[in-house]
Length: 232
Image 1: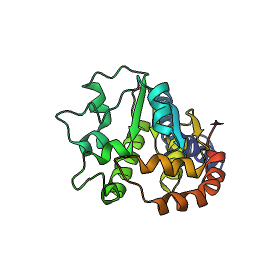
Image 2 (image 1 turned 30 degrees about the horizontal axis):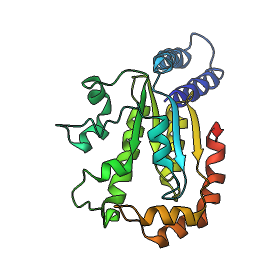
Image 3 (image 1 turned 180 degrees about the vertical axis):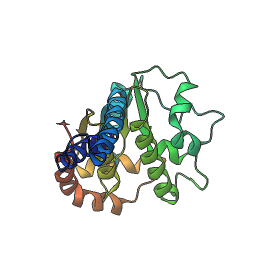
């Protein structure tokens, strides 16, 4: 990563002060430094993810409806995956985008719920059966987008209320894309409204799970704030 290359250059410069110029050790360090500087310049040219927007809120809070209205032109690789294996897209997204209708710079829509529907064992009554697999594939998709040389903006549709999943994505972005702008869209919808909406859905969410998520939502916000640029 850019951060690692910068750190290596600093270490080499500090080490070189221990040797006189033109000595063998000094010259070896200078060759190493030249190589790392070249790597740093190459990494700095990679645009990778420029903007990353993610949603935060309880099931039924209105996240997806908002995104349908404001990000309806976003490119959804899962919905455009005819003829492709979902796991293949997530592991080699750059190749997929190069062979798709994606236009460089437009938003890419990522949602574990979309991935769920294409996984073996999924049903609307018991989506939890493939939950862990779907969120890990979504995480892998974002990670590989962050390492892609293609200029991308990502909108991630998800609850964001979890113990490690969302935070690990944010930390990976900060490491791989030092110039990325991260925005959190928070939907502070009353829990009774969320429960009423979910009860009318075809895809079921246990009421107990909504209450459990409501208990840790503030904790999640506090963990995310140091890693993001905008909280809306």
